[in-house]
Image (cartoon, rainbow, N blue to C red; front, side, top):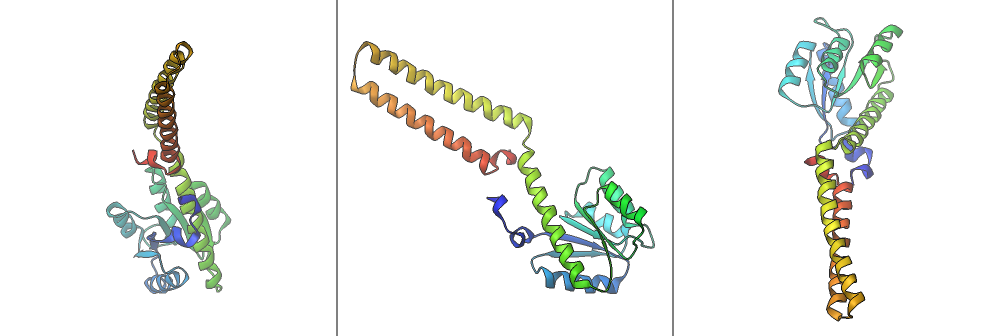
Length: 214
């Protein structure tokens, strides 16, 4: 079950877009992030423009962006995504610690605002922890986002199956009240087994997330 995945298992095949105008820092950060969590797939962009181009062509699970860059800011990138309905996990990682910027970032929908500093080990631990939380929330949201039409069709079909079986069972019970016959008992047993199997299948469809794939 997805909800039982550990943090490391959730990070497998996770695609991270790292955005910073400092090319040397991009290289170092990519190495350190991979050391912290080897399963991450890390793609880099050295400007907001480059990041937007990559986002148009590819899908990412997490975006980690600097605040101040020559062509624009990490907040501009975040705002562009959110205004377009993109809810990709977003972390601002910057040396800029203005309270106003932090508040604006969180109001725009950033998942975390991390200040760059000398303790890089702790920063990368925070980044990894935030990524795990973002992915866990995404899994939970996907489980809840079952289209109403799918739910309606599922319930209608289940109701039809169950009512049909129950009507047959009641028919056999009526016959039993008039005349005892072993075949009636066998018929009820078959229908009860069928009803039990149908309900188990319905529960499995819900628990496995099968409805979300339709």
